[in-house]
Image (tube, rainbow, N blue to C red; front, side, top):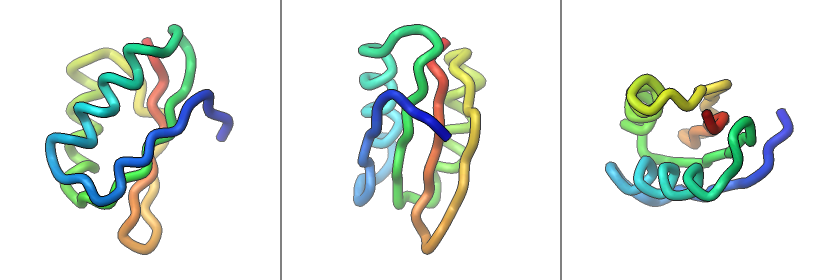
Length: 75
């Protein structure tokens, strides 16, 4: 998937991946896509809740080798 910006949140624990994602999205234009990499297993439910609360779209999420990748589209 194409993305405009990438955020490496690996090694960070809740709530830092979401806080850094929120800050990164604030600096982006509407419709742009942010790719986030995280290792915190709680980030799966956190990103789902964040998308619902903020109106930003969680386009895709995947897991490979205990590493999570999220694609968030700025509203």
